[in-house]
Image (spheres, helix red, strand yellow):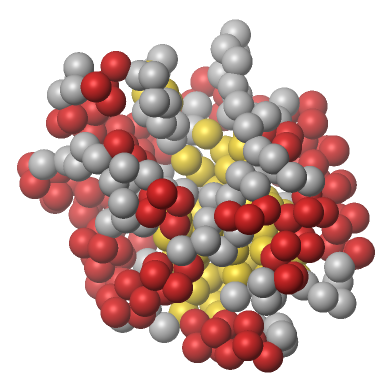
Length: 278
């Protein structure tokens, strides 16, 4: 089994060391994990993220763990980069400097609005959900004009607190998914949503079904912020993924994607072996 979204204490809101995460993953039969910690750059603002000056520290820590555990588990390293066109030059410089395995993109902020914060007004019905989704999809479309990332995290994140978008946005989301397919970007199935008020993974089953129809590659991540969340809700998510028709998940090495058979992952977990690349 693989988990492609694990955070570290560098993001300022995660507990447990990177070594703790690896040891827990090994104990649960994981064959490959990817640290995908936050890089959120908002000049003049505080953010729950590593500082750009810490990227080298983070990268080197991943390399140490790769070597330390090379005979027990495959470890990958990447960044979850919060989209901000104002700092795109810095983002591209950082992602080109370090040989990460994968660069993921996500959207947590719409201007000053933190769409995942429980303290924001829209959560309490003070903001029209359709206005929220309109702004989010506009930013998602803008993000897709850039080429620094390989993967999109929790693509329908604004639903976190139970506010789903209306059918009027269905065609717009489908158009965005078509762009994702054309650019060869993978979409993450993020299982943290099962613990949020929405009670389902990101993306929703209907969006995931469109991804399958278009032939968009997917991977799976827990968005773990402490070791015990690694692989959480994967059985439920994989059942949904397979029901929709996916037979493979995508993993990455040096920014190059490769596919792993879901059946092999389940088998390898039981046999403590490594999944096969195809």
